[in-house]
Picture 1 (spheres, one colour):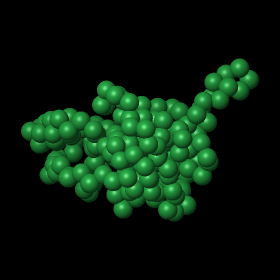
Picture 2 (cartoon, rainbow, N blue to C red):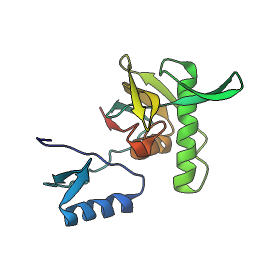
Picture 3 (tube, rainbow, N blue to C red):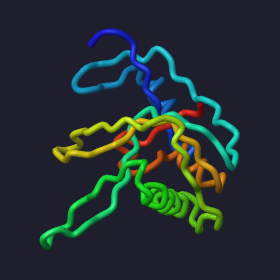
Picture 4 (cartoon, rainbow, N blue to C red):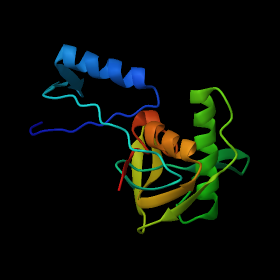
Length: 169
């Protein structure tokens, strides 16, 4: 492996990000697939001002799915951002994350999603399972707290595996 690598980490828990940044700086390196990566710089970015309408670009694909039963067995159905259920399932996911992070129900107002560019599908292998995610530019409108959770924790599923990270555009 050669060259430079930018690695972004986000969390709704500020203390987690601060402790991780401190630990990485103190260690001076990271191990990635048995490669020792020398850390040159750690920077904690200032979060944006969260508003009821914001536009984002995905840094990693967003995964949204529902479950279906076919021939007596459960299967995941990965949703396209162009399907009507995508926004609903995405909002339900954000509400669960909000409850987990804040210990209370998210405020009543929901979210609507508007695609700003045609989404690009990406089929990925995650722990031996084929996962369909989407790269896109989109705007969300509605509850600013849900927008904040999406930005900090990730939009959609499998965020701990790196899916659903966005930047403001």
